[in-house]
Length: 282
Image (tube, rainbow, N blue to C red; front, side):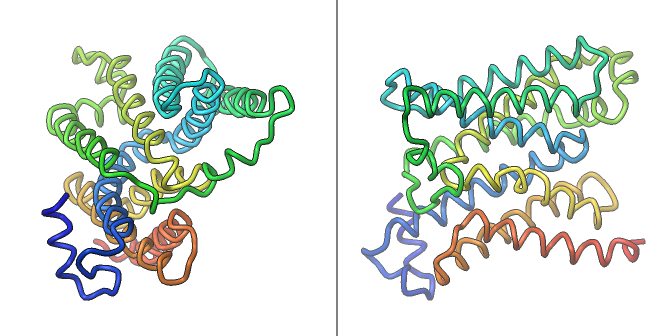
């Protein structure tokens, strides 16, 4: 972290002065790690038409946090990650063994997760207010250890993208063709779902449950408006997420707003801009 602090000290901002406001410097590093994660995952979320699934995962992460707190875990986030991964795997199994539409299965899981989370949070007359912070998030509370964990996840996701992107894309666009070529669709879907589950759960306390789904949809949706090929699609999504993430953090700091909501508004504006130019890309 000392190297990062030395680099940030060179920036022309009041909060970047040496020896001060480390929480803001940590938040900037967290944004530079989280944004590429969401930018990459967003491309596949949009391609696989799983925007509501990522929202359901956010609800499951909240329920996992509540279960972890109820069980007295020193780190409720551990329970949240485990529950979200199990939720993702169970969803994948059910979707592969039912004739119901995906949005119907997502609705079943999402509503169940929300109900279970609220039930546990209010069990015994407890107040729900202690979980309010999860709704809006607080990026300024991020710890260096958590940033390191996210950096490891980003590295693993890049490896996954390098070795499995073509298989994931083919499975999303043409499942029958992918199956005929020997691609294990179940494990491809399960691996991707678990990756979303872990990223959503770990980022929930900093970005906020109410807007985290937009970070998994808007970068890829905006990139689809401009990209002419898959390489451009991923690059535009990643760069858009990073730029809007940094802009949202800076705006929230200077105006005193929620960082997650500021990032979402920038992403929405970016989508609007790309939408206006989508007819001119050819």
